[in-house]
Length: 78
Image (tube, rainbow, N blue to C red; front, side):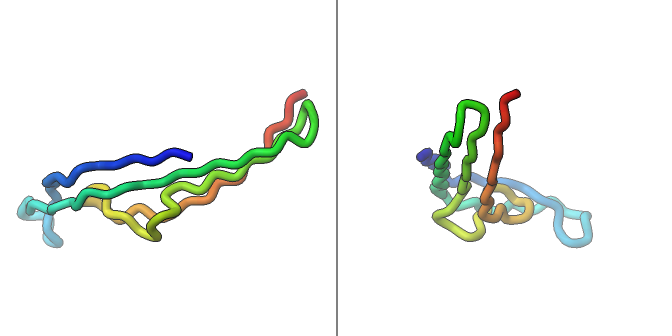
């Protein structure tokens, strides 16, 4: 499991008309990531990673919000 804290800061973005740059306050936040894996054999393993599972959406920058992610992996060694 991994946790990350980011302090609040001021970011900037263009307004809707792309004529003026406006400041955007980004609040401090915590993200949590967890991974579980299982080795089925010497050559095959499965893993599941959940990123930012503590919040459904998060504003990390002045851009679009970041959403939760779940990543499944299969590793085959030949």
